[in-house]
Length: 80
Image: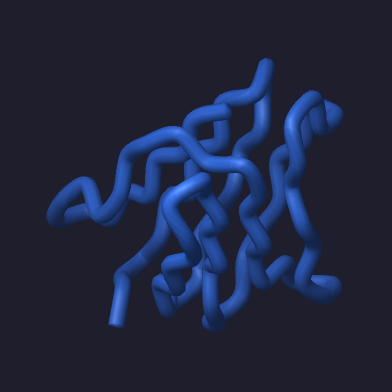
């Protein structure tokens, strides 16, 4: 599945991933392949990206996540 992390300024990340954990408003949750379509607001916190090459963490300042057909888009207000 593919992930894009975008801020108003730039594209922070784009690539193939195996799992993504995001800081949802009602608590963090993980997105895996074939996740149901969802749109959720995000709190300040870490977005943990797992891929075949390892794990990366991006600390975002709130935003929105959309999951549709194995494509994840995180629209963040900013990345620390």
